[in-house]
Image 1 (cartoon, rainbow, N blue to C red):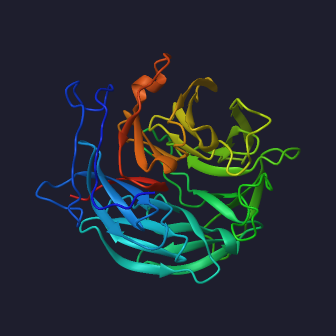
Image 2 (image 1 turned 180 degrees about the vertical axis):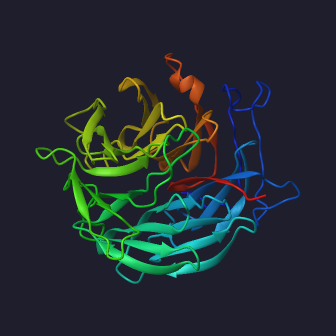
Image 3 (image 1 turned 90 degrees about the horizontal axis):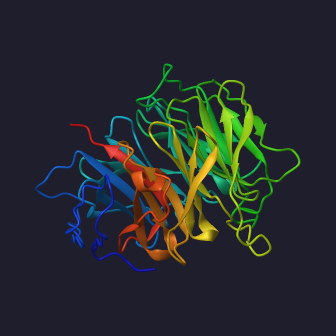
Length: 383
């Protein structure tokens, strides 16, 4: 992997909805160091950068790099608070979480989890009052109270947690926001060598607002070790979607009743030779209108686009040989899909129109020199 001395942004031209003309074949921008310059941003795209131990900042309108924020060791995931004022970054190597002021792009506090913990994915409650970090090697979920960003408690689960989702309501919400349920995928232990090894089919569920949260478990399929990995909330808060990497499926869990249903199985082009570590799909991104899901296929160097109304695959698109895609995020306007490509030291993006129009060959665009890990977060800044 390459270290970042500055962002070199290489964009292939075109793509509907990407605000690029046919003549905009290459754009380049150098990092400002502080993440700020004379032009104020209304929104930022934050990307966790594994090699330089930093949080990358991208202007989603121009697709230009706007600097980096030094955080902890090997940052993996990032989430923004609903008010846009704060970003939270998990750092597995240094066993902590960085609290970033989005106005200054500086770390204002570090929350320590202690030796023997491996914080992976992070989520925030719909009202922004609590942050949840999956502590994989401690088989626990940390709850951080955002009023003063202190570690409030840890919730024990039966196996190493990986992904976290707190169902929230977006523009298409049909009900009032809720803050009383969190879903956690259980995926083994990094240090014990069982992570991503298809040892679990369970999702932990608990109410973080309870005085003493009680953990319950939702089973995807009792006869199959599905290997749940990534998880994402439906925009209307009615369900969560789960990437089952061992069985190569996407599942849906209804929040009311916790009923699990298989959405789609992703075909394996090499069933005899595909390893289970980390397998596919590993992560998910959902469109703001709730109609489209993107499943990230790490070992296949591709993404699969799924119509959530019909539960049919629209198409599978290559992210490039050796790109090892890991995370996915669809922009709030529904026009652009961002994919962190860990093996290619870059951030890929696609036009959602091209991914969903039923034709083959959606064009991949790239922001280069970004040694991404998994985390992607959209942050609408407080004005």
